Amino acid sequence: MIKRTLPAILLGTTASLAIVAGGAQAATATVAGTEITNVAKVKYSVGGTPQPEVTSNTASFVVDKKVNLTVTEVGNSATNVFFGATAQVTTFKVTNLTNATQDFRLVAGQQGTLSLTAFGGVDNMDMTNVHVYVDANDDGIYQAGTDTATFIDELAADGSKTVFIVADVPATGPIGAIAGVSLTAVTANGGGAGALGIDVVGTSGAGTDAGVDIVFADDAGILDGLRDGKSSAYDQYTVGTAAINFVKKATIISDPVNGILSPKAVPGAVVEYCLMVTNGGPGSVTDISITDNIPAGTTYVPGSIWSGGTTLLGTCVIDGTPEDDDATGLDETDINGGNFDGTKVTATMPVILPLTTVSARFRVVIN
Image 1: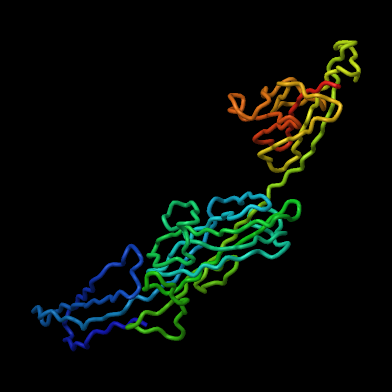
Image 2: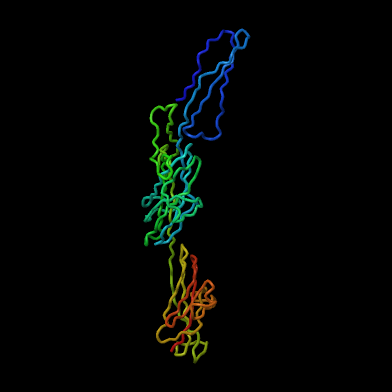
């Protein structure tokens, strides 16, 4: 309670009064613990004669701490991952809306199975090795050797900090796997750099003018209540999956008897193998490497490897990039690759987008 008193002044019935109080309302929140003092003055006249100005006593009080904060997800999208990936990151921002410097205790959590997640879908997987770290250099990018603090230390009023949840993806999981995660920030006492203060506790009962009372003013969050000194937000990991279909097709190109007209699989005939990889989605696949052993009874045709081609009506189109038989040279500088090591053919491609097919082809001669 704030009390302001003026001494009683006995005035005549003809006295006129003018009371002036100093001070204007601050434009920004005043720091908790600030002592605010002021005095008032009264001017008056008796029988038309001005009298000496009278000054009141000094009224004072200490500004209380209004505890408030927010936790928000950064990026407004899920983190796309793959099974077995490590140190995968979701990002949050913690803002100190308290009128004082505060520490914040950080708690990472995982959503319950079958609960709705932040960006669509239902939680059906838990992450492993879950940790929470504070962005040390405020660049918004998680760096394992730099971002090692696990709590927010001495965050000034109206200041913000980026916080990362870092976790590993299980090696296997359900199709369309989604893991919902949460970050809760708990307001803690500041005042000691390098050490996490204890959680702030609200003042119960009537306040005092002399001390700093603690008043919670935060909204209810997804995992916290109204006016409890906490805030929370959800994010999610979505595992990108891809359904791969791999087909190999042999086509007789020519034979020594019929040439290219209705060729038959006789000794001396040239056979082209078409290897087709189709990605049914929904995710992309990368780092594709196809290997094919040269079958017994045939001989590889030197320089016949083509990689990164397309298909039409279930067979290879005459396109892609030509590859020589070794794994070095100018032909290895493009995005596709290929080589023959004496027993098998290898063809590589960087990516297959969802709902697309890439192919590789090479030729053999029937012995």
